[in-house]
Length: 308
Ligand code: KMH
Ligand code: ZN
Image (cartoon, rainbow, N blue to C red; front, side):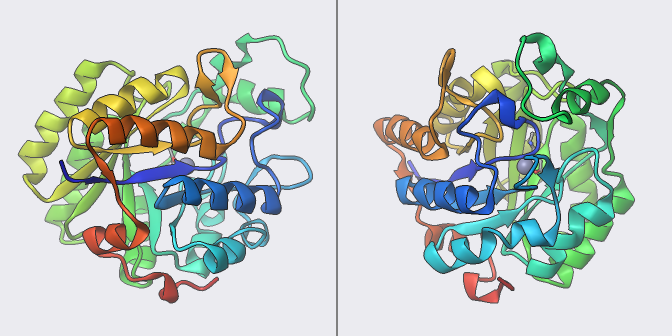
């Protein structure tokens, strides 16, 4: 079978610091975990920033500058900046750092949706920071806004003007049709790197049938012009990405998507999840792709072209 891309999403904007002491928060923590994940076999690092004082999701350039330059210096992994940021942020906030850094890759969320995190309140916890509980509670009335106008703006400012290629985040069947629409408008070019996202409340659930159906429709809409990768939230992470690997797809791990390494057991680092999925995919006969193989396969502009 062909090579496989392991993406690692280091911290995200879903989990809060009280949920795991291993979630990287400060610039040095994010850089260290990123380097370790890359060494373990992640060829793409999907990046969000946090305010190092409060641990709150942040999209400020100042906070990205706490780890992006170090990662750019010390690893050849592809740096992929989130344009999703956090659903509570405006598009201006979300785009500040990607516009300044002009990364090789950026995430692009393909539709407006609910993004409900409040079920994570279920567990009794001691909250370290006073923002955590209200942040999760407020997601029962939160719209993650990604209108066609927003998508077009990201494609034009980051894609056309700055040469970034995209991780197209598709949480639902409808998002594949939105992606096709932008292909028809001539605003994107193949190969499309499509991330199927399972298990966010507001998007599709983590049922294997959803993966097979997404693939059926993606084949119909994009033929051989796409690569697919899978991420799944929480305890569905490893089972669903293993299924993706067995079907010839690519995989995403990382503490952004799941804090655990096994049921009820916190992962001690991002790299621990990379090591686990690497062993699984190699036993399935897949070969882990290097960053340069990923650059070639996705048509990236090259690490030398980013402003870090
Ligand atoms: N947090 C994931 C469910 C983004 O950064 O643009 C999706 C994601 C979005 O990674
Ligand atoms: Zn993300």
